[in-house]
Length: 120
Image 1 (cartoon, rainbow, N blue to C red):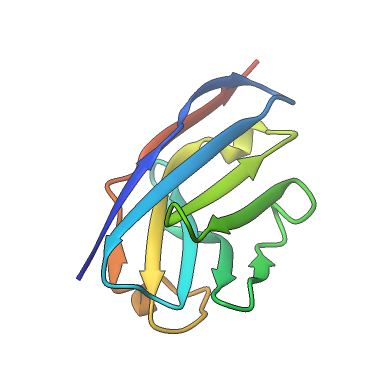
Image 2: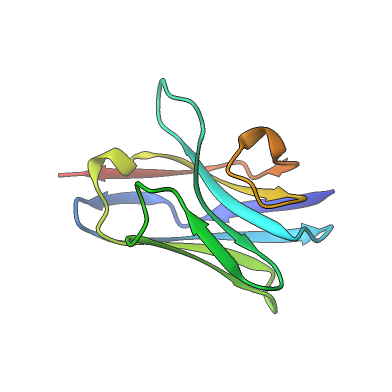
């Protein structure tokens, strides 16, 4: 089993930036990702990273604005979010999966989530 603890959420203005962090402990997975869920909507894939090749992949809606990375020494998965829009407002979840996927049903472990609110 793996424990995932997110941090870094908050309130930011449109066009601003935030950096989310997820500290993983316990079992090591080859694939980690960030998902998000807005009120009244389904949880959706945001960005993923595959270890050890560090291959990254993104949802079209965040491509070019968000960057996912992993610090192996600190066992931390980060999501740098730039040029934030109101539609990025959601609870963001860190996820660990046995293989790369954009599907939430492939995820084996979820973090508790961190709120990101983008407003004018």
